Image 1 (tube, rainbow, N blue to C red):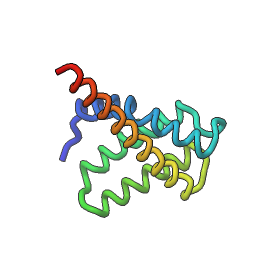
Image 2 (tube, helix red, strand yellow):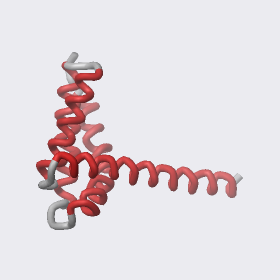
Image 3 (spheres, rainbow, N blue to C red):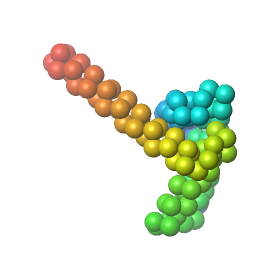
Length: 117
């Protein structure tokens, strides 16, 4: 299956805007501000998106998903200069932070919607 470059560019832009700040906050909380730079978080997201898109074009299934997860963890490990368990912890905390932000924004949206109408 060929890789759609338009879709990949849109994915890179959207993922960078949404995931980078959350990943940076998580990395900064766990490994410190010296190791977790915002530019590193952007690099992780861009490389992870590109590698994941290319890899996903050729492989599917649970094994491909596990390999992509390992690739993302390896990127976090490399850029944030930490171990495998810390990379996993950073990723899990990033998901929790992202979920909290989504819930808060959802509540704000419901309140605004209720007050507006």
